Every structure is written in structure tokens, then in C-alpha cells.
Length: 445
Image (cartoon, rainbow, N blue to C red; front, side, top):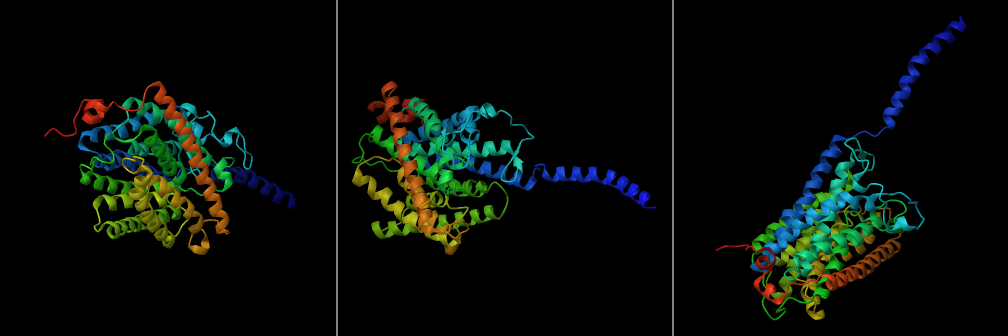
């Protein structure tokens, strides 16, 4: 009887165990989540929407009418150029983790490898994400849109005076030597330089905004002031476009920040909420600061405040709470107002559309305050127990980005200026870049 029982148990196990093993394999294997995939597809489209048409309209309305097409053309051309470079090698040198080890500083702490060049190995079946829940192809495209908008932001600093050909070469080289390395050092995973330092940058305060803002400051100084600046009036020609562009940026930024959660989860929901709160606070902060200082609030001012708030909350969106986001937004709105309106006049540089004043300064404000308000003691959700220590880490990340970007950008510009020249001729600048560079007019009235 006992032997028959064991024989029966053995037969039962022989049937059940393979099924259990298969079930375990199924649990362990990555499974695509349709909800996360749908959200990441949506977020990707929203981020691209920020550049074309959002940034194109935002910048296009602020230049003089003879230069509107040149600015829009630059945004579109950068979108095409960076998309192709991203596929060929950009994604690989940003996110290939070969040779990296947590806590070990080596060559791959600064730049990724070429194992994913030409998107090698990426198929419809490739799945990625924090828990491998959506297609890697979607992640490639999502991060591509970040790589597109970052150099496009620089356009605002040198608007109305750089040659189109020089702009294209500069953006390609800058993307390769500045954007991709900084993105890798922050987001490259264990073994990346700034990531191992513990720098908190949820959606691109250092990678996108400080990076672009500092590059813009260097570019406008190297190129020099626009002809007639600051004595000749250079008022925006269509603030309606600028307000529409700012609204598109505001909407698209939900994809930028909430999409950086890489999942349709609570972090994405909170990132969306604090993005709205900080942006509203910054818009009001800039508006009231301008109202008190100049006697009247302006449409350009509130649009600029909106962008300042969006910029400042970007590094903090995944770790701060609602009350912290109000402080970050208000701080960015007021500080960026005084920097954009007063600092450049005192120092004499011609940051045409305040790329540095809004993105550079706003990014720095947001990055530093992330170290404060990510702490649970102040309503945050980050693993910050020592605020002063985290603020110091944030400061080091900001300082590294500023120094690296400034030096490399300066070298790129000086070399290109010597080789092909950066600036259009005075006659072309007077006529306007629409006609001089593209043989077209924005308006035929």
C-alpha cells in the first residue's frame, strides 16, 4: 500500500512539476504592460509637441518679423538632424552600459559604448522600463525627443544672427560632445559619474536645461550682440504666437515630466500634479514681480514665467510634494525675472530670447531646491535624510555641468568660427535671416 502511494505521488509530481516550472518561467519573464506602453507612447508625442510646434511658436513670436521663419526652420532642422544622429550612435553612447560598475569611475562613467549603435538588437520584442514593461523602441523614441529639444533651446540665445549652415554643424557636434555625455553621466545607471554621486535629476534639470542654458550663454557671447543691440528697439513681432507656444509647452511638459516615471503609476501622477502647481506659481511670481517693478504685467512676462516654472520643477518632479513645488515655482518665477531683465543688461551679453535667463537660471534654481524639498521631512518623496548633504550633491552636479558645458561649447564654437564662420554678414542680418538664409518671407502682405 505504501509503495503504491509513493508511486502515485511520483506520478502526480511528474505531471505537476513541469507545469510549476513553466509557471515560474512565465512569472520571471518580462511581460509587456499595455497601460505603461500606451502612456509612454502618449508622453513621447507630447515631448515632441514641445519642440514642433511649441518651441517654434514660442521663439518665433519673440523675434522680429524678418526672422520668424529662420527660428522655426532651425527648430525643424534640429528635429531632423538629432533624430538621425540619435539612431546612428546617440542612443548607444547615452544608454549603453557596457563596462560600467557602480562605484567605479572609468571611461564608461563619462560616455556609453557603441553596443547599441544603429539600434543594434532592438526589435519589436525588445522590452524595457523599470520593470521591463514597455517596448524599448518606445524608450528610444522618448529619449530621442529629449535629445531634440535640448539643442533647440539654445537657438533662443543666438537668434537672428547665426548662419544656418554653422548652426547645423554646431548642433551636431554639441549633441555628440556635450548632450550625450551629460545625459549618460546623469541617467546612465550604476557606474555613471553624476548618478553615482547621488545627483537627483528626475527629468532633465542638468541634462536639458542647465546644459542648454549655459551653452546658449556661451554662444551669444562668442557670436556677439545683434546689430543695433541694445540701442535699437527689437520688440517681439507677434506675442500671440509666443503665448500659444507657451501653452503648448505647458501641455507638452506633462509628457516631459510625468513620462519620466517610465510607467503609468503614482510617481507619474504626482509628477503631473507638481508640474502644474509649480508652473502656475512661477507664472504668478514673474507676473507680480514685473507688475511691482515696471508698473504693468505683460503677456511676454507671464509666458516667460510659465516656462521658468516648467524648467525649475523638471529635476524635482519625481521627488517633491505639492507644497515644495509651490516654493520651487515661486522662486523660479521671481529669480528668473530679475536675471532675464536685469542681469543681461548689467553684464552686456545679448541672450536674444532669454535662453540662459530662463533655462539656465531656472534649471539651477530647480536643481538646488530639489535637494531641499525631496526630503520627506518637507513633504517630499525622495530618499533624502540629510538635506544639507543632498544640497551639496546637487550643487556639485550643477557646477560640473556648468563647467563642462561651458568649456566644451566654447571650444566647439571657436573651432567652427575659424573653419567656416558662425555669423551672417551685416547686410544679411539687416535684411533678415528669412530672406538672406532661406529666400522666403514669413509674411507676404
